[in-house]
Structure formats: C-alpha cells, structure tokens
Image 1: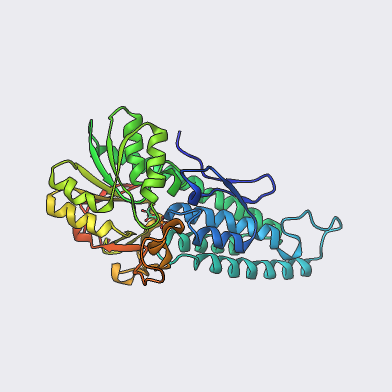
Image 2: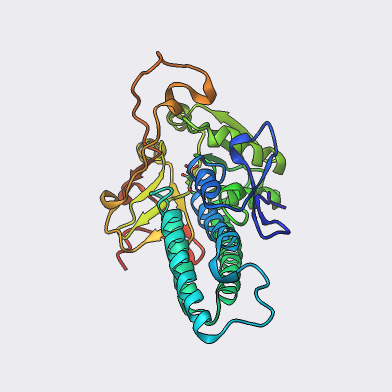
Length: 356
Ligand code: MRU
C-alpha cells in the first residue's frame, strides 16, 4: 500500500501531510482558507505536479465552502430563496470560483497540472446548474474525480513501466515522484515501487535533490517504508555512477512536457539527462496526460519558477554561505526532447518526436 497524504476532513477541509516536516515528523494540516492553501502550495507542504493539481482542486472546494456568499456550504434558508435570488447568488458564486481558481493557479508557475486542474474546476462550475450549493457539490465531485483519475493513471504508468524493469535493475531517480507527489502510487517512482512489490528487487540511487532535498527526505522515506533497496547520493554523484557502469536506467517525473517533448522537471534533471546520453544509459520521463501541455510549443515557453536565495544559502536555517550571498535558484530545468529515450504515460510508452 502506498502512502496516503491527502484527504477531506469531517468538516470538509483539505487534509494534507506536511511534506516540509518529513522525514522527521508526520504532521497533518487542515486547510480551510485561501491564504493557508496558497501558503501550503508555495512552501511545498504539498508538492509534485499531480499532487499540487489534486490538492488545489480539493482546496478550492474547501475554501469555497467556508467563504461562499448566498449560503453554499451551509444548509441555507428553510423557506427557500426566490428564483432571482438564486440567479444572483449563483452569479456571485461563479465569480468567486473564478477569482479563487485564478489565485490558486498562480501559486506556482511551472507544473501545468495546477493550471489544468483549476481550468477543469472552472469549467465544471460553469456547467453545473442551480444554486451555489449545487455548484459546490459538483465541484466536490470534480475534485474527487481528478484525484481518482490520477490514482488510476499512476497505476497504468506503473504497469506500462514494468516493460523497463528486470530483476535487480539499478535505477537513478531525481526529486520525489512517488505517492507523495501524486494521488496514487507515483509516476517514475511508482514503476520502481511496483517492481519491488513484484519481487524484482530493484536498487534505487536517490539523488538528494538540492536545495530542498525532496530525494533524500521524501523518496528515501517512501522507499524505506516499501522495503526497496536504496542509497541516497549527492546529485553530482550520478554521472560517476554511470561512468562505472552501475546504472541501468534513469527514471524521472515531469512538471510540464511541451508539444515537442521538452521536459520541465526538478532542477538537476537536465545534467542527469546529459550524463545519461553520454554514458548510453536510457532516460525516461514518466508523466500522466495532465502534465502534457499542447499549448506550449517547446521548453523555451515553459515558465520556470525561481525561488528565494535562502533555500540555497541557509537550508533549513543553517548558514552554508556568507550571510546575504546572492543565489541562483531556479526550481526547475528543461531537458530537450532529443535527450529523452521515451515517455511513460497512462496510455503506454511513447518515443520522441511526437508533435501529434
Ligand atoms: O518543487 P517540487 O517538489 O514540486 O518538484 C517536483 C518535481 O519536480 C517532480 O519531479 C515532478 O513534479 C513530477 S512528480 C510526479
């Protein structure tokens, strides 16, 4: 069983396992306001492209429930409002849905799943008939559907990815692409977790993934719980491991895949792809269709999030550079399609180029 890190509370709030506190502490948050949701996404309390989309959809419902005008989220007036009142309340509610969804979509720019989920929720709100309460119900169902579909897509990718596995396979992975990053078993890590469940005894070299250490804090935590062999390594060790012939495949996730196949993913993915090509190691990106952005012609048009210097110069509050040093801290890089051996999706494994 993979880790569950998302849920609804009894009162309808969003429940999240705070990923900034792993692996030392399993601390759950209840989120019912827009500022708390935005803070959780920006601070990476929930992170990973598919998980951000799911949490955003569920969080949208939770924040609307507690903010809605005209009685959505409450039992309403027993006598029932008149038709004009309902129309006015509905219009005000749809405006609130729009405004809230746009604010959430802007919280992090690179993972397209966030914008995709918010656009899907806005369309669902507009298509729902009736008073705010009915629109909110439709949104709750849509958020649950986004989660359920992601779980199913993770399962399908993990199955298709078994074609890349064999007994004792040695895998390098970057960042966290497991259950914590998705609504199911994961994307790239899901393939390895399933191979482990099936007794293939994979061995995973886990890039630390500086500066926020999603590899060592989160991926290693998931692998340890699953009983899969792993070693944490500095990000810069991957190339020498390949040079020694100790890597069979590189599996990474994606925050956005452009129409030409360029892949935006966690900073450090590009050097991994270059090293893999140099050493003849196959390099796969594993992502559901919600991470593909046909509106983006190439990686050059993918917006890259830049984060604050303190994450690099004083990680977790420990000064590792002179105080007030400037830092270059892009959260993602773009790997050109020609360095990608293939893409594992919920519909199978595809190879570049794939303009269609
Ligand atoms: O900044 P993060 O931790 O949200 O970045 C996550 C990644 O880069 C993952 O590799 C990507 O979202 C794919 S997760 C299935």
